[in-house]
Image 1 (cartoon, rainbow, N blue to C red):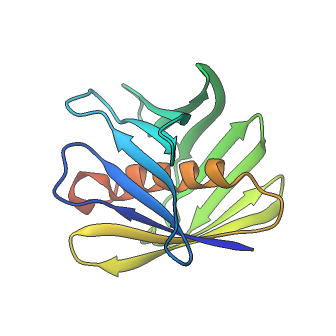
Image 2: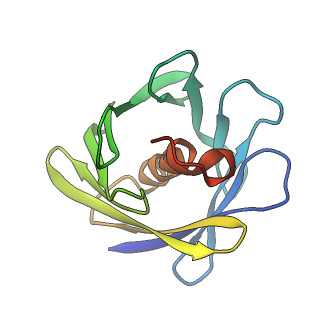
Length: 164
C-alpha cells in the first residue's frame, strides 16, 4: 500500500494542489486554469510533464468530467443522483471504477472492477482541502490521484458548498 497526501494550495489563482508521498517527497502537482468556464486542470509530474488533463463537461444536470491523456479521453466520470450518499461512476481504459462515500463526502472508497483499489479521507485543515489517499497494490497512482482531485472539485469546490 502507498499513502499520499493531497493538499489544495490556498490564496492562489486557480485551483492548485500538491501531492506528496507519505514522508513528504513531492510526486505530482495539479494546476487549474484561471478564468476558465468550468473546471480545467492539468496533472503534472515533478518535471512538469502533463500526465492527465481534467475537463468539466458544461451544461449537465449532474457534474460530469473527462480525463484525457495525450489528447485522448481515457476516462469519463459522472455523478449519479443519490439522496443519502454521493455516488460517482467512472468508465475508463484502466477499468470500471465506482466511488462511494459518506453523506458529508469526506471519506471515500474507490472500487475498481468491484475490488477495493483505494481509500480517501479528508483532513480537517483550516482554509484548504487536504486528503490522505491510500492506494492498494498494482494500481495506477497518478490516475487514482486524479480521481481524488475530481471528487474534491465535485463535492467541495465553490467555497466548500457541497453539491447536494
